[in-house]
Image (cartoon, rainbow, N blue to C red; front, side, top):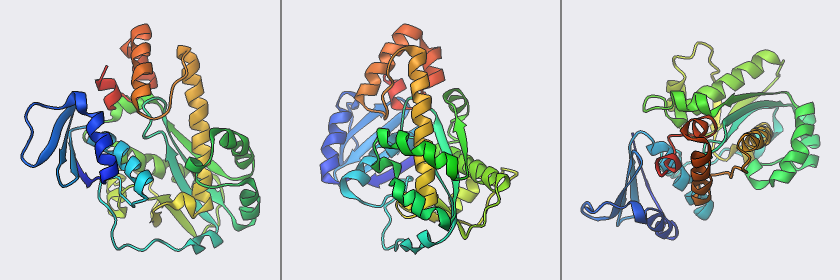
Length: 305
């Protein structure tokens, strides 16, 4: 797998520093550096283009794609391509009853992947707005723990959880992160539609790949949901997606707490250097098999142990 995208100057230095100890002695022409992190080869070029090659290229690249979006508010697909000249969908979709889905945990070394689908009818809009519902990334964990149970009591939802052992067993070059996400989104959406009577105008998924790629990923799944609207930043525009984001985050936090209790060590979120420190401690105390149960072993954090 190869993922290519361009980084801004304010992120370039951070990338160079991060891979300092993993740099190769030989640098390709016009490259700032080339590094090997686990099974991924990373090459940063003078133009600002960065190339990730390897089985786990999608995981390693997604960390920097997310940082790039945060720093520059650029619209970037998770395949590394930047969206240009594409108009955002209008916010008036919030006037409709919708089904929406969102996921949490794909960028975290520790903890499962959690995907939730919800149905939000127009008569619940005021209730959710009064709670302060919005994208879970813009809410503190304390706020999520406060409002998620109230949402879950009132709003129809279905959650699908992919535990770490199952993730580690199935993730490979043919079943990468985006394909796993597509399968999990489809599963949650299908089960929601079959569990509840949902009089909806649209099904909305926060866009992490193209529509064509999504349907290609689920082509072998016997029970599919079609006619999906894929929207960038959907959790900011569609209440059903925002609710799905909050519920997924809430359940992820609970699962992370359970895993922390199992090793008697608070497990950090994300995939940064602090995660490496905790992973090393767990590996020393409990061994590789325990990490296999609580972490995503294709992440570079595992390769650095």
